Amino acid sequence: MKDKLKLPLHGIIPPLVTPLLDNNTLDIEGLERLIEHTISGGVHGIFILGTTGEFASLSYNLRRELTERTCQLVNGRVPVLVGVTDSAFSESINLAKVAADCGADAVVLAPPYYFASGQPELLEYLKRIMIQMPLPLFIYNMPVHTKVIFEPATVKAAATIPGIIGMKDSSSNLAYFKQVQYGLRDRQDFTFMVGPEEFMSEFVLTGGHGGVNGGANMFPKLYVELYHASVNRAFEKIGPLQQKVMQISTQIYNVGHYGSSYLKGLKCALSVMGICSDYMAEPFHRFKQPERIKIEQILEELNYRDLI
Image (cartoon, rainbow, N blue to C red; front, side):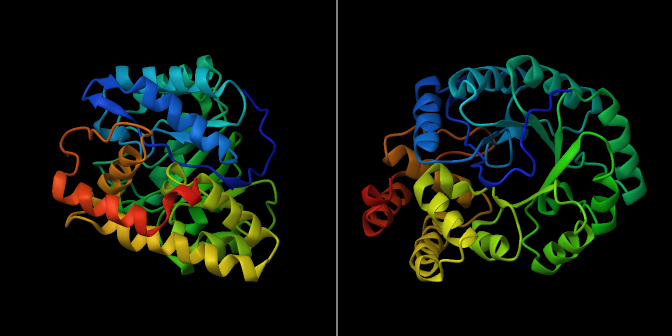
């Protein structure tokens, strides 16, 4: 098992969007621009094939190609984390092996979706899968999509399983954060990161290790600056930076009327910025012209060129 990560992992690790030209074709030039954009912005790692990466809508061939190309393009400059969540145990293992062969640093795994597992079943699943897992693993709490939560006691038990090195939580539940932090209080080496960017700063101020924030696709420097300001408790800097993050969250992610608006807005903004295609994998479609015009206006109001 590869084990070269310095633990706990700290900082901003953007959950990369998957640039596409169509349902089965990567936007390779866009992927390269996106990776260079985020790394030059100072991010501390890259996470592919998460929710923001539309992993569940991508074919296995496309997931493998994205993993291979991302590892090649990053070329060891920052850690690469690869999502291997699947409803099939064997497919998670297969993609983890691809990630290991390509030089990725770790994998990320949410509970198998469709059949909801109980907590004892979930813990047994983690024990079984780690026997075959070729890379260190982060568990991924995403109950809104998986309909299963890693309860705090399960997280504490999972942290004792060899090879499980951290957690990304996207529950948006502050009470849950605190319960998990308390349960892990004796595990200084176990990484705990948060997905929702709206309270990444508060999370870091109270001992969290960083953020896996979608907005860092667009404005990596902003999120990195907010992270460092939070680590250093530089409250005079935190306020203005947090305001920008909230502008992004309340405006770009809320153009449109559906749960997909976050990702459509994010991809549209990246397209307007000239970074990558905004093609969405089925069953979704990119924003049409009226929504795109709104995104263009929001970016201008943000003075987005100053944030790049």
